[in-house]
View (tube, rainbow, N blue to C red):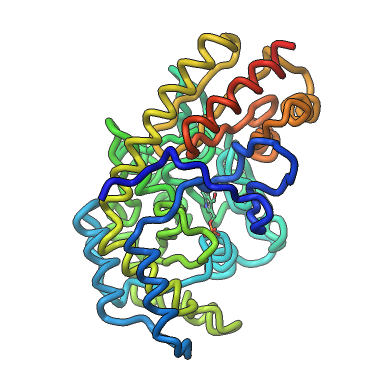
Length: 383
Ligand SMILES: Cc1ncc(COP(=O)(O)O)c(C=O)c1O
């Protein structure tokens, strides 16, 4: 079927996190899309509801198979049922992995800028947060491998939390980059947890590589985290997967989950995962085409109307990283200027030092909404 991504659906007064301002502010911030979910997913939820008995539920063989087929056929990641665990979310899993791989006081390395919970979960769990800045070259972020190695050695880092593809900035790390990182981690016996929640939103011209696919011989130190929620815009359903290949590691992760009985999902989440991976491909392909057109449009608009913004074009996902330093001197003032013009972006400062005077623009919305938001940005920053 053909989906209509131009449809504007009012999300105010629904408890939506993104549309929390109840005035006419345009929300172009937190990473969810303003699009209706794929019809097979909606049908699945209706079917489960109509059955009417909503009792304890466990993952079915068909669910495991849908996950295995999706990751095998799209990314060449060979999984079997024993490699898959479930978790309420990727962020809860990041916290869980801290407990699996480290002790209180241990050093954990993450890049800067980074999706904020990478930093807050490390700190909240009493681990030492070590940051390695990404380097910008030719308009995209690069890992600073020398800095990563030096910090691992200096702080006796135990765990590297990788964001693959990266948020913010949208880099899809190449095989060469991932292999170089893996070699360093192997050398110092550092575990790697790869957050791959943006994997399926990889844009044309780029190829996503699951970290676990490269980790042969080091699988006892590698886990990846992913979810159907970002891909299919069902974040409110909550649910995610943890993949690990090493039997002992899987047992250690399960053991940690059992401590607080965190391993099952609600029945809607199981069914949504299955229907998304079995029948969601058509929606996803159309959503990505729409998103790429919005990225083009936003970049063209900004180049024309706010030429001093430095744009980092994403290789994955719908979030454009904007260096607005030419238009403000202070992070709060930058956010407030936009807010006063009734358009909300994510303040770059929440993603670390490297996010200073940057903003993250979410373009996963109907074109008409995006155009209005861009016009407000232009007025706010030029005025
Ligand atoms: C890199 C990354 N990880 C995790 C999440 C959130 O995951 P969850 O909702 O499953 O906790 C996001 C959401 O924006 C994200 O960008």
